[in-house]
Length: 392
Ligand code: FEO
Figure 1 (cartoon, helix red, strand yellow):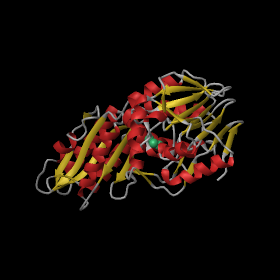
Figure 2: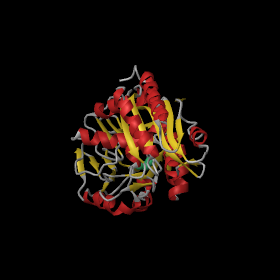
Figure 3: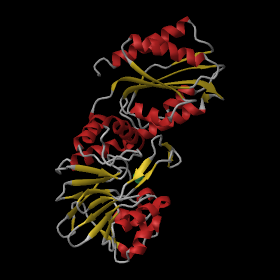
């Protein structure tokens, strides 16, 4: 429960949530998470950057007590979401002189979400600075990483970027810094896929904005601190800017085996054509793993039987998710089997308007696949390989 010193006058005072397994009752967190808060002591003023989940308030308050923090002048609210703002009311009650520093949009949200009185705020413009005496905070508005009100805070003299959710990872760890980069890479990629990828156009702009600053540490609001900032910046550049890779993501359901036989044949045909396949049986898949695979894939092939005239509900959910996550995928196709009819292809194709994709000829057949159906799958595999021929 002790605070962690980053350097003289700068401490991590957050909370590690080892047990959390779901965020927003939606996103799987197989590795738990942390809610990072940071205390910055200047020669004249003291600032707290973000707070923690309301269930973990005592941990933050206890760490501040151990540092004998008698006065907090500013609480920097980079983001209004409750995992960072949830302990704001307690901090403001303990420090009646403290002002909440945030964007004008964030002020409105904190009034609504945390019932913070309007007279407790100091709103800041993009690029505005705030002196703590011998230390200076600079505020960088960064909308849509991943809410519209978000900002980042740059500590000028120490060259530390407090990046809020941006560049973070859901990873519970005793390591303050991202020492095991392989482990952190996987967690950060999952985080990007699930939370940031729908806003990749805004992420591009915010990456460029951040690069105007010299940075020695990136301290996000979830997961370890990056003491090698180029590690996470290069990873984001790959995920956001690079062309998709020679990969097919194939989420599927099979009720009586016909679709599974088709999927297995297609996988073999794709392998023979030099295409990597990531296969997800949606009955057992961690939806986060599917999201991660969408970051790089050039093609999605959806496999489904027909149920009550349409695609299987688990496939409908996967299509909805892919559309919401807006990956940089370029091609989509559909394979599957029906008993007596249905509108599965029209239904699924209509569910992905956010994806800028070419639809490759679907292979949807009656009953168990036959010789001509396997030939159609071979043709689809060859068409995908041809489309991928210039990709890594
Ligand atoms: Fe970690 Fe968007 O809150």
